[in-house]
Image 1 (cartoon, rainbow, N blue to C red):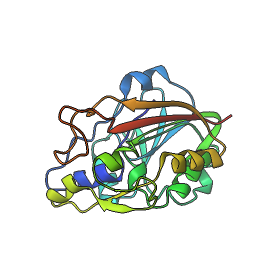
Image 2 (cartoon, rainbow, N blue to C red):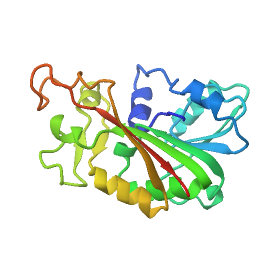
Image 3 (cartoon, helix red, strand yellow):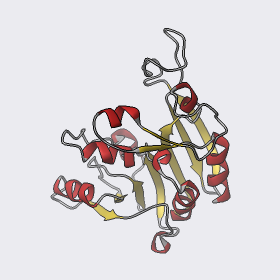
Image 4 (cartoon, rainbow, N blue to C red):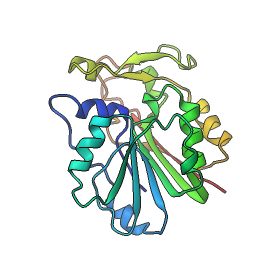
Length: 220
């Protein structure tokens, strides 16, 4: 499946010292060659052979930078807000991927609805995002059930980049994607960074807790 940047990564790239934008899962892309398209909540400049790709992001500047890295125009880059309906995209895509965008979206129900509507029947959706339970261990919230709480991404703010974390419970997210007619097929707690939380995290010394989570859905 595909992994792409979200809005927090957009903010990082728009800083004076942007991070590398290459976040494509290339082996999976080669495996999943098919005639449809991929709609992305974020940007990528990876290997698109055999796949028609549409990449969407809120940031016009990031779209401009991504196009500059794709002189062959192999990817259809668009500026857009995926938390709003996109009627022209309905039923168009075989697969949808979102990487570290979900926690940055205030209108998460609209975001989920747009991604679900964009899929063809039989299509697949994969999302990587901050584990909702880590919002407590990493002090974004003190009450896990305080859905809708907004806090700063402290590491980014310390770098001068003002961007926000929107907390939702895992139940909230699952309900939103199920309401779009999707079926959960996989939930993965990601080992990466499980032992690299902030020093003030609610964890004992040496403790590990999943920082990221992956969700996979299908559209039956």
